[in-house]
Image (cartoon, rainbow, N blue to C red; front, side, top):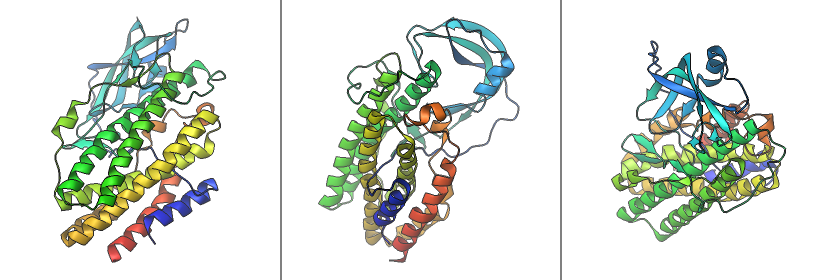
Length: 367
């Protein structure tokens, strides 16, 4: 059965409707450093009148946290307290805008995961690394839905600002990724239907980025937008086998299961503005996932030699699942605003893999 029908049925079962979405991430696990040196630092934000946590309390909160910069860095050890610092309207990637907070900083060790990035939507991969623009203060990306954050605590607002800014920056990077995808399709003589769908998807991602960054700007203390992304200057087109492999992993697995995750976000969201943003993203991203399957079907028809490499991707599909790290700060307090706790999302991924991705792959490869 075609992927688009399987996905529509799955979303109908999850949401009770037949529309829908995505945003998600694909981060492969790499070995950890087992003898860390405390040669770096990590900081928590606290309210102006709060005391800094002890090193042990800070470790409980910080160890395991990742930053989806390039490359990904994961905190693996916390040492002694260093100092308390004022925060002057700066943006901290882990915690959102912190203009009304201060930072408690500690000795730290990181595991730097070379070649790994956290990607939501279709990632921009150049070489072996995933890229996204840095967050900067920009008002041009703040137009969009405004949620009601009046009942949220400062901590919940900070977590939501960080989450939606991260989602928005990944959607922004997806614009560049679809632009490159369009060039790759043109280089391979793709039919007009695929080219139109690819360009429409890039336009969708601009709107998604703007909507998500508007949410982040509402939850945070200031407007946020993407900075420069020079990595796009290094993009190159791919041969048909490389295009097939990338499409299978990034679109047919990554984007399809990102739709599944977003359906879970929508199911728990209660704020009307957030629900409107997620519903719009769901509709568009479901089409983007279908575009991936359509593209892979076209490539396999043109290049039978791509069938075995693609089959290997699907045989190891669990290596390409969206990461749940962006949901690490999710809680009951943030679920209604689109950030559920990660518990239970693993089951959604497993269900989507079993009910949508693998059956669609078998149907595609048997043709």
